[in-house]
Image (cartoon, rainbow, N blue to C red; front, side, top):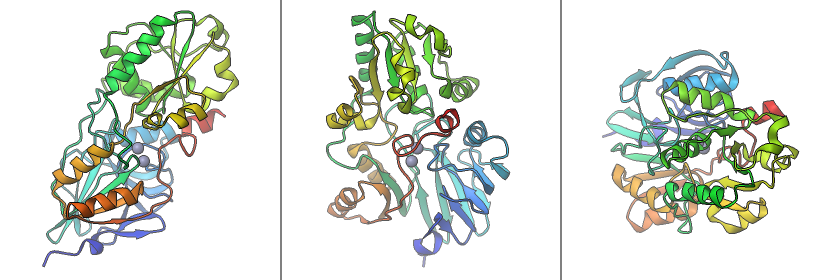
Length: 347
Ligand SMILES: [Zn+2]
Ligand SMILES: [Zn+2]
């Protein structure tokens, strides 16, 4: 008899816990041993005893929290089986942000995949998602409703460039999360042939420098000089979403407020945030891609961590897959519920 999934992973107040390996996955509070899927602050927190993650995720955590973010760290090379206690784990690309990985946990003939956050759209800044055949697939459902169907991100970036051409006397301020989304927007702008400097809010500088060190070509990305803001007509400026409402943003010439987020599919959200040019660019799977991914894993059971859990659980039932919501609080779009570490440090 294969081992029951519930014997491999259980839910604790700190998050998902594997008793056989004595570790947590993406714990929300400090724990002795953590396996971390990616660098977003709702998954990667400082203060653990040891952290096992991809080299890029470990490096991103060090950039964000300082070199002493944990006591000991171990690199998980992609695709390589690693023994942890009585289980074997394997990190496989998740296509979400640089370094992001799903974690496959295997014991007694049963395999559970914790996907973390993932997307299926092409992204020039990270490795694509790879479906891992498994018995239980653990997924988020941030955009798990039929209304969420993300358009091609390249088309959204073309909208931005059209607006830049149409309003050369104005500065375009693009709100984007400082890890992943910002660099993806920059890379897409370059792919569309935009070769002028892309100006950065200070909170985005270090992670962008790290992406460049990792070989992602983002071109010239100077930091905005506060005193020069009034002269930046025609410029494209990337900043954290929280900076859009700041006094900082108002010093630019007739700024066009743009926001790159999957939430921009909801017009009311864009209006409420004062966004003039919504850009639907998401680092999460939309409704169709959640379903496609679940089916590709061949999992007989699905656990849904957070987001629109009920809708996705219901859909699983309609295709004969057992599913349950985990109602995990504490996960969510970084920057939506709380400021990123960079923004917190800057304020
Ligand atoms: Zn994430
Ligand atoms: Zn997340």
